[in-house]
Length: 348
Image 1 (cartoon, helix red, strand yellow):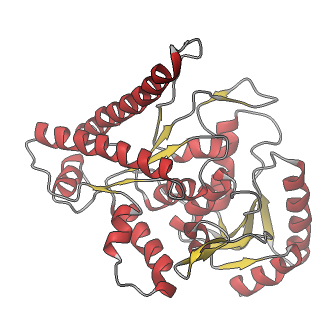
Image 2: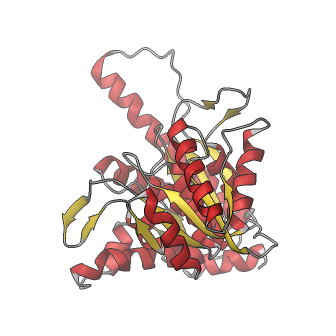
């Protein structure tokens, strides 16, 4: 599809930009609304320069737009309907904007980055931390975790902050914090104008079909010893059961981290089924992104989650993890010894 055709679809309201959002707290929803406002301003400016008049919707903001569209859906089917609606908007979107911050990347947004890459929608990663990342054993400095960096078409740092600043009391500090949001919104406006005028190509899809009976284990890439131990046990059990198995190992061995992240993505794409580890306060952001990528490519997903906690708001939402992770999995298991039987069932 040519850049002008893509811009015309955007202008016609057929391919709104998906602005991913942290949903569980007011600060996340507020940030998403601010960034979406900047995005909308930039899209209109870019379309005007192309001689196109933009018609709503030019953007899609989860929670606001999905909940509004699903009024009247029965409670027992509400969260599934949100998943289907959000997934549809990622698939046909002009682009996806993914604001990510903190040391624990939001698993829902990370999933959406991976899913966008899998279905061919350009994903722009908006990094909101004032720090960058360094990893033992390598001299690389990365703006974001390596696997998310590989999946994103573009990476922008919106969190730069002068740590030498001194503040003249409470009000001055509050003004400075508010100013950073103004700057972020303005940066997104400029970025989205540029996306309209010079859109990014969709990410390339893997050339090879997945190998029948091959299983890939994504247990965090081996960053922590527990991940390496669990992955080694499951690899041995699955291979004993007759499956060909690959394991994400981007944090093991040597070589540039971005290249090792690419190897993990290629291994997942070459597999018929991907097993992901969801244990932790939130699912690891890179693991969530790889699950999204696998689902976007049409691979089967088995989610391993042993946690006892559920996220509960009532009958509309009663889940152990973000709904994007749960509904994208073909099956979930709670114990390691359930993995091999579940893989057998899923692969026949």
